[in-house]
Length: 112
Image 1 (cartoon, rainbow, N blue to C red):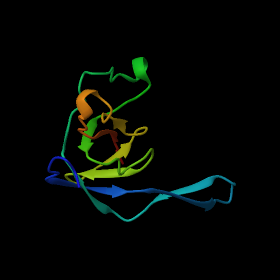
Image 2 (image 1 turned 90 degrees about the horizontal axis):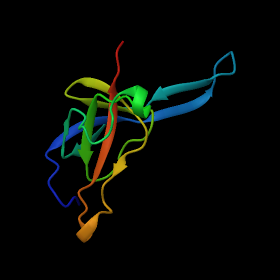
Image 3 (image 1 turned 30 degrees about the horizontal axis):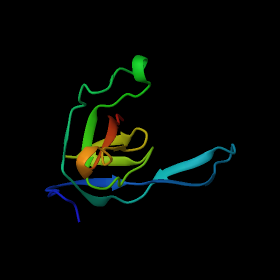
C-alpha cells in the first residue's frame, strides 16, 4: 500500500515484443490497457534540463506514483491522451530521514 493516497488512475499499456517481420526486424506492439493508480501528473519540473540538446531526454509530462509500473517504451494514457515512457522511473525513495515519496515516470506525447 502507498504511504500517500493515489487518487488518480492512468492506463498502462506494456510494450510487447514478439517475433520478426518479413525483413527480420523485431515486431513491437503493446498490451491491453491496465489501470494504474497514481498520485497525479504535471508538466516537467525544472529540476533537470528538459531540452533534448542538454539532457538527451525529451519529456512532456511527469507522472508521480508509489511504484514504478511502467518501463521504457511502454505507453501510458492520461486523460485520454497517449504518452510514451522515456527511460526508467526516477526513484526518490532514498533521501534523508527514511522519507519515501515514490517515483516519477517521464512521458513524451505520442502523435499520430
